[in-house]
Length: 361
Image (cartoon, rainbow, N blue to C red):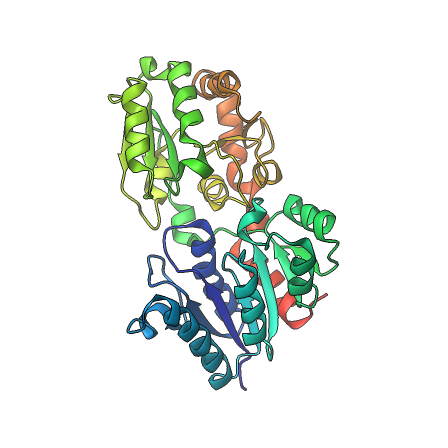
């Protein structure tokens, strides 16, 4: 029996939430019986994936900048045709109008599914609402990773072909069954070191204001990104060098997550942050700001974590101290953590993707 062929097109497979999801999606689709092709625009591969890989950057490397972009389009079209790709799932950022009109033409013989990974629509929609509607209205589906994103899409663009499918966690059964550690006095962030998204200024200021380091607590920041120097300077400015440690990026930071007292997120905006889902799946409660979007669709305040008003240093510091000092609250959230995200298992979300591709709205 011939498998249906699907191509997942992404910026890369490296060091970002959308990129991590693109890699994860290859496993979900393969388990659902599809022949999977990953097409990446840029030559970065950090996450594990399955199926065939077509690297547009490598294939066009001998062309100069402008002609390289044209060549990537030609190569992408040729690859889709030669491999008889029936479905294209586009996970890229898509905000340049001319490029997206050309890409729509390149995809023309395939069924097209677009993903919106972030509440910040500047990354996924051209400025013109008119042209955004033109690009997206005839797609098989516009997949939103949170209900808040889907509502915003419908409100701004009046599109009818939207659906919400949450991001799953992809952690082995063996990993999930490991015995829980006695938590260390560590508050953990893991993700991209990007100040404009993650708002480390708020995180560090609240940590400083909370004074929990006087009780032996440390803040660990795990990841990589362009704002490492900024973060290091902020740590020095707040006189926190003895209490904040920056750890290298790890593809699967499960050991560190399980050891942490709780994980923390202070973003300006998100989509559906996989770090929260993974933390809860591993039994570690989460403290997050109520940003758009994602945290309020995952965290049930005082049930599996704490959800606090964004941009409020004092409220965040108070929440940090609650998890440090209130053992009853903390233990209750920890005991509820894993079960609260059981509906986001790979099996459940894979089934939703399979149903969407075979039977779109």
